[in-house]
Length: 235
Image: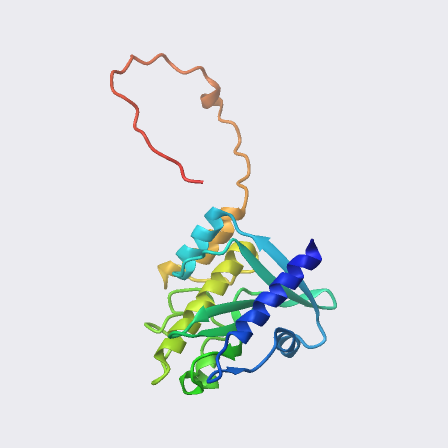
């Protein structure tokens, strides 16, 4: 079963690269991109099944709908220590696709971006200086072309698609690896608290000490003719 899943993922990534038309270009294979990012590391591919509540949280954090129920992480370790985690994101730029490898560091920040395949004309591909803006960035409100990320003339759609992909990957990483998140300052940016909220939501609260007063039998209350307030809980 594991072999079938690995083969299916490889075929899907190969199909994504093969779908790049003639005017586009394939720069790297997945194996080449992983070796470039993690030389001398042991890479382990892990499959994560996403529950509905997790997909909802990813959508909330990233601003992009998380429609897929499976996410594949490529964890890289050297001498047993985690170096980083790679994610592959395929998305549409204008009318054609591009395939990115986005590496998230152990601190939960974007550590590296590699363009594996780009279906649009190469003129729409930003220069390296654009991608350099994204490295070291956490998932916060500043990770946006409306804030800290500068756009590129003539490559607006590529820039927006890339930023959206990075936000999406960081959100997936935050949900799956809540302990690998940067310390953000919610005072300077209230929306920066989302990483801590994700981490806190996964922790089990310690049992509180019993209150002697609460153990006393409740006093009788007069009957009420009003109906209790209704509500629904979403899983």
